[in-house]
Length: 462
Image (cartoon, rainbow, N blue to C red; front, top):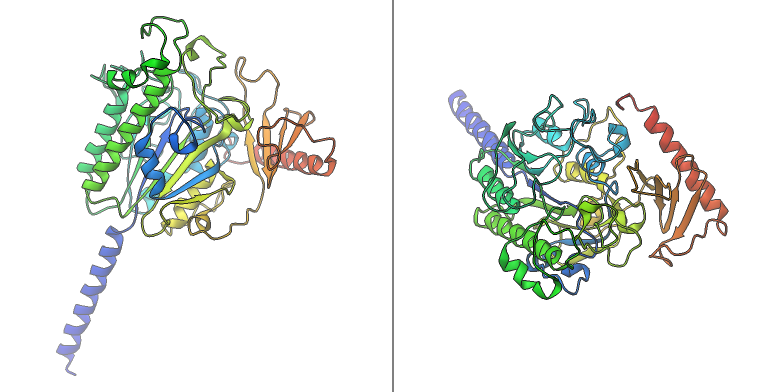
């Protein structure tokens, strides 16, 4: 072999290697995370709701894996969202409750979000929807850009005046003004716009925290008419009298319809097969057990579980969840493994072959074996901590933990406690702490360990 021939072969080999690497890079899976606001465990037809029609999410469940014991990281929105994005129990981030405007609470820059991690690994990142991880999108607080998102359209917490002609969206820091139509339509249209205009040579992460089904709600007439028999009186957002659940049912169906349109667009763009799509809710629903005037006419369902949004009972933290990943997750499968919102970051990182941060406490655990119908051994109990506001929790329970079938709920001092066996008492009726003292003592000790770990976390805002 001549030197010239050898050089030619070597050059051809290197070109081929570069081509393979480029192909592999462009074929890395995309990630879409659809997060619904205040959607209850019992609000979807495929989670046994007998009234509300959700055909698109029913079909989505058939295309991937459905989870029956998936938990949000908090019974309130801001801390739950912080945990989803960081893989850390939210008290570590300093976000303990929902964040009102102009309050000095926000996701600090030292936190590393899923978007930050993916950006470091060549992903382009977009967010469209609800942010609620600072005190305002027009403040000096860190904004979605600081959390790793290249482009963003979002509102702070909830739609003003409602989900029709909403006037508090910001587009990359600039006020949008009143939109025309419904927030769900606007959010999906902007998400599709970002995908159409993306860099086609790079994978993407699209975070789609939708505005639905948080109040104040408004829906197109076609959906309101579908449930008119469940509505009493004239639909008037200024009328502060109970009007029945029809408007809420319509809003869930409208949300389902918009997700269906987005998923169809994803397919028509040729992105379905190489995109991991995750669907879940940030916390349990506002049920008809209203605690505030602004909750009137919200009728979310926990599927019979005890409690509601802002409770550590199952109704406040157990949420619907589904994942679709063609070729990896077998279609039409179901898992009853107890999983947690902060598990998503390490799981997604594992699926993308990206290491999770090693310089901080990550509370979540990779559950990708479950997606392959393989066993998973959790290395520590699930944990919740949340700070009550106003009349959220008159019972004073702020910590919870689950280990196997055992679930404990305690007060701030970890003295007052209730213990439930969820295998025999799913609806948390009977406190069995006195009959199982060893379990109670063990789980109390674990909560105290977590409290100390959070207090000593070097990244926790002081």
